[in-house]
Length: 179
Image (cartoon, rainbow, N blue to C red; front, top):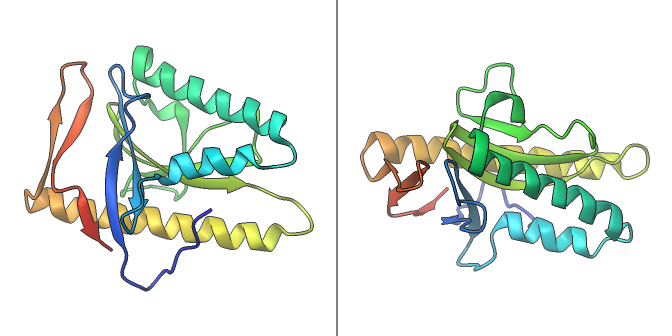
């Protein structure tokens, strides 16, 4: 799992998740400081190492199915997400996993056709809960920083959003930036 150094400069690169972007919704994640592994892939790998592997494998398969449903059939509609702020103007939210409220996956939802998948964590109740809450707070801050920088870069036309052949949307431009 990444340990964020909030307040320090960090190189971010948006990377398209091709295995999920096969229809009307395109999915991206980000990698930090020249890493080839995105935070989403890192999260999947982290769950693979947990003692409750079977339980979390089932949960991550459900996440994957939900993303595939968005991509192929429905788009990234509102009901798939929970806003983290009362009115998330920056698009930062988390995936709505009604059956597993202990799993939270942060996203930046631009519209029904474009989502950036961030990191997340297991919500632990009881012992160790404050450590996880700190981790979630860091990921929330990271996603908000990414959303702010992307908004600036899109407004300055350094990054564009275009419609792709499948009906999804893609980022075009220099997808490496510092936050």
